[in-house]
Amino acid sequence: MKAHILITNNETLPVCRDRLFWGVGIPDAPTDFQEWISPKNSRKPFLKMLVDMLNVNVGDLIFLYERQVGFHGVYEVNSPLFFDTAKVSNKEGLFVDEQWPLRILLKNVYYFPKAVNEDLLFSTPKYENIFWIWAYRKSQGARGCNTITPEAAEALIELLVKVNGSDVKYANFHPYKPQKLEKIQFSFATQNSKVVLEDYLRGYIINKITENKEFEKFLGKLDDIEWYANNVPYHITQKNIDILVFHKNFRYTNAPLRYKYSVIELKKDIVKPNDVSQLVRYAQWTSGRLANGEVEMIQPILIGNDFSEDAIKKSKSADFNERGIILVRYKAVDNQEIKFEIV
Image (cartoon, rainbow, N blue to C red; front, side, top):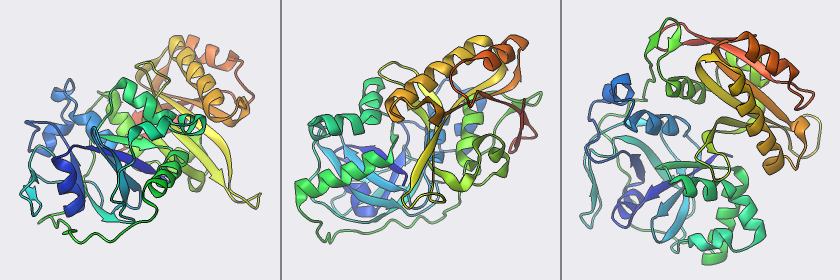
């Protein structure tokens, strides 16, 4: 189960709730989608917002976080990501306009009238441990779209039930119907078989991670992917794991077995020894935080356009676990396709 916390405030929450949609953007955001993916805007947050939203899929669970109030739920993603600048209003006259052009449609699963206060997420040691991803994200500055773990999603539903007792009917749903709903086609700028921005590589993988058989070269069976996220906050530092993947199957046990965590570090250029060290630190942290110290559950993966000899030597001599580090070379074929090979 993949779930996300989407940020709203006291003016935008009623619109998102009543019209069953959500969007992300900033004031004066471009109204032309090509400007969102243009490398000339690399210093602006547009591409990062887009990559975050490429991690959102139909069927994912959604919780709406109202600033200074708490968490509302529960919703489900009801459309692919689309680009739309139309003004959307509710009956009270509150509205969202073109500043939120990256949008998804929602459907209500359970309507709980009372929000879960944020303090409850850290009210017990159990909840503190479960909501690590939200705590670290908040310390870095929450993004518009924040992917949470399956355990956090279950706990947030649990808290909504504890606060409300049961869900209720809500009479003011009036689903937004965009005039034109076209799934966003992600493309990227390349130069000499390389992406010009690392976010392009991250977005490509996140967008296709469960469907592109190329990824089985380093991820294994795509059917076993339980959960994945990009830019996962690493402790309380300002660093993030580029991509984190949970793997689970039912093949050998009566209950679902989570058997592997893939920790992926991305480099758009040549991988150097320091990049190997960085990946090992992330893998060690993942082992302690998520795998109860079982290092053999961690699969470190390093993806780059090429590898220095020293980086290859360091990765092969790294004494982290028996799995070893998987080195993957990527090559941008054109502005919509990337190929991968094991080094």
